[in-house]
Length: 135
Length: 227
Image (cartoon, rainbow over the protein chains, first blue to last red):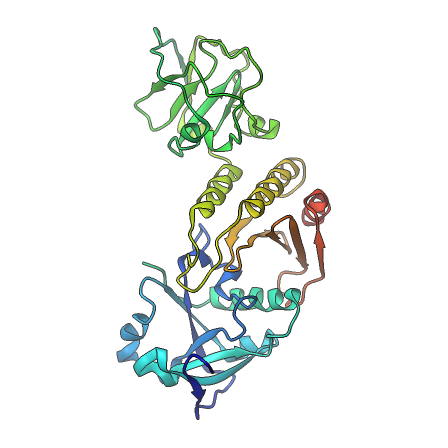
């Protein structure tokens, strides 16, 4: 909460899509994603975007939140399958997209092996939905 | 492939390890009968001298290390497997000849690319991902190189026909993500410690095993991947 996060009234269904910004180091030489796309070891509240809160007309502006980064989408159900949760949580740092912000939850106290299990599963989910590659 | 006699050679300058490793990716070094990527060279006992460069029209650059005599201690540290991997089957090359190597007959092995990638990690400053990432320390990278060398040696002997993805992690560790058939192995390296984690089959969410090992124990993990 220290970085300007606050609760959000948005509710998510299993079929809802999420976005994840991707640093270029998360892409392998063959263009696929690696598990660093989800740095669950270092970040106890990994950020994701809520697709349904971002109008198609604002998608380009949303991408500018992280210039030069790639973007992938995956479903809430895939997060759940990795034994994680998603919590909508407004983030002032996202400006006009503040209420499209959510965090992955449920893993902060996990041992490294479980975090890596989850990061790998999310890697595979995001690999199916790469929308944008780093510029 | 053809053989040209190129004479006289024009001695160039002494070549340091750094200069050797920074030659273009497509360079091929000939040491005696063996060809290898200069990126594979991990140390020199002394600067290479004299060196003779021969630049061909085609993109491959062949560097003949033998002309002028390299009779002192072995100047290169390159694995035998690397030699073999790039050996192009020229049984009796004369040291005074330069072999033209066609592009289709030789390729840079994945370990060369992997070593080069690890070298770039060394230059990444803190916050390299714009999100508070930790810089990579030399112990981690040295361990990663050691593991790569073991992996390369074993992959040449075992039925591993794939290559690992080299993954930089924001906590300063390096991960090798390696799929072979219906198995996946992660080796996550930080300092002198390696976390080895296995999945089988590939669609399994929970790993089959997880353990922390030393580099000397990495072979058993790779043998599992190869089975």
